[in-house]
Image (cartoon, rainbow, N blue to C red; front, side, top):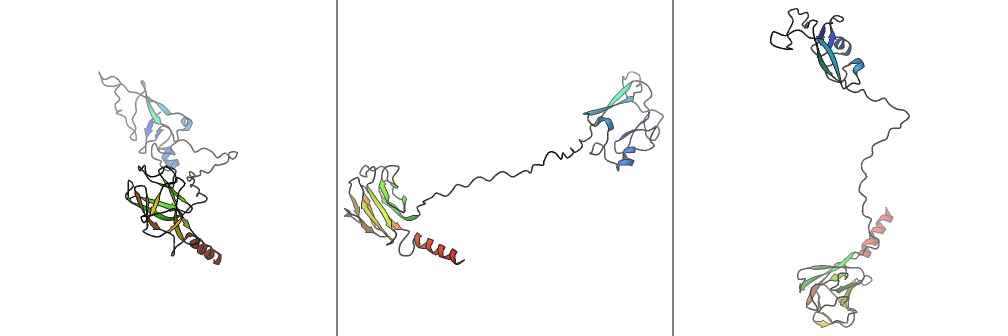
Length: 245
């Protein structure tokens, strides 16, 4: 056996082939790339090939040297001890299609579910802005229905740190849609409230920039709804527009 290695890295028997059978039959696949065929060794991690080993020079054990007899650039290693060389494993062949197992399409990750819109949403109808007291500079949103004022955390408008303000239901402000006007009334706590320095003992109308005084806190009123805007009118116009289209 004369083991030869072609310029593309393939090993073959020079006694049988005059040129590399891999390159001639497979279009010169580069050594180590997919397509290189190692025959029966395809399922092994590596392939070992026994190479005849020549005697080294005196005092140098196991040194491999070039033979004086060279044919076609191939080394003749003689007939002495064997040397092993590892050949890389061939790339795994693609798995055959199994008709009995249906292909499963990969689906993208499901988009996070959107938070459902709350039913019975109460839109903003106005604001109260603290112009005097512990919440100075803070604003409080008013919504449809009665907005109860107090120090408790579950109040619609929570005022802090003033013992002169009832814990719950000191007063209430609300919007009247049919008249597009706002009103204020005393709460169930039995505490006094003032509108522009006048005591309030029953429901009274309020307008923009009016000052509501509760305890040591003064709140200025700013409407959202009124003569020029209302949610009911906006909804009605949108409904008519959708019906016309």
